[in-house]
Length: 241
Image (cartoon, rainbow, N blue to C red; front, side, top):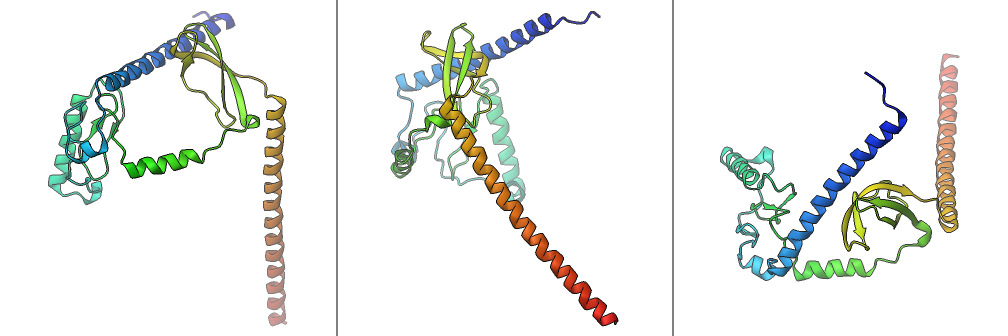
């Protein structure tokens, strides 16, 4: 079998990346379409409606069923184990093609589909806690951000800013020219700005100083241990004498 040239290998690799990007784009478009349907048809329940027993407008099952959560698997009775397995099998049967996560509400056993069912409503107390958390979020430091240049399935080129801790961007991103989510065929992290480079130098210097402090602490502990060993050996020799 003839060996592939470097050019052929690169072409095949690009074909694989584009195929994966198209598939990711299709999944994202499918989810976005379902979310639009939820909004347009008013399918999301309020917390009060869920508590009152209003069924999920996606699958018709209750969100808060009042049955209590299933006990841990090791603590279930034979009947509970069989009922849980039947419920799981029924869920898989109904949502075999959904390709989505499942979710439940604490204290309930009804399992819902992340694609079919609008997400569970939050109580006012939870919303207040979330708002307080978000209210304390500060704007990211530009020196902590990297810029990624991406080629999308539509062949448009976009630049996306992300935190330095991101090692691999998402498979999809928003294309403003197309006004829709597109798959990412290629992503390249651009060289850091001067501010970003200086921030990285500071971070590494701080990490190095912290590591050196740990080494110094371990050296002192080792020195103390060696002195203890020497003292014990001297005591043993004194006894032998």
